[in-house]
Structures are given as structure tokens and as C-alpha cells.
Length: 64
Image (cartoon, rainbow, N blue to C red; front, side, top):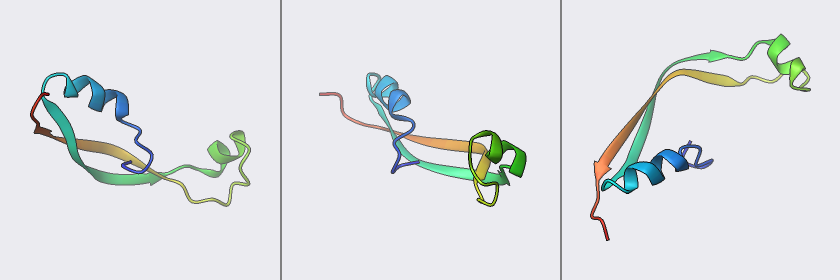
């Protein structure tokens, strides 16, 4: 999630209020099934984890 920066819009929003994303944690993973993968043009042999819940930690930062 950090590498892909998928929460950049959320980080920008809370940045205006003096906060920033400080980290992530995940609970319970599921996996995409073969049918879902083949619909997206994959072979169906891939293992793609999908988190059921993502917690985003935020921290206070100085506003410039």
C-alpha cells in the first residue's frame, strides 16, 4: 500500500487538517477465486490476496 500510494487522495485531504498517514495494518485476508481472475484476463493460477479490513493510522504534523 505504501509502494503503490493508493491512499494518496486521503493523505492529501487529511494533510489540510494537519494530519498524515503514519502506517497501515490489515486483518484477515481472502483470495480472489479463479473465476474473478479469468474475468480480468488472468490465467486463474495466480494467488492474489485481498484484505477484508485495512486500518489506517494517522499522525499529527505541522502545517506549513
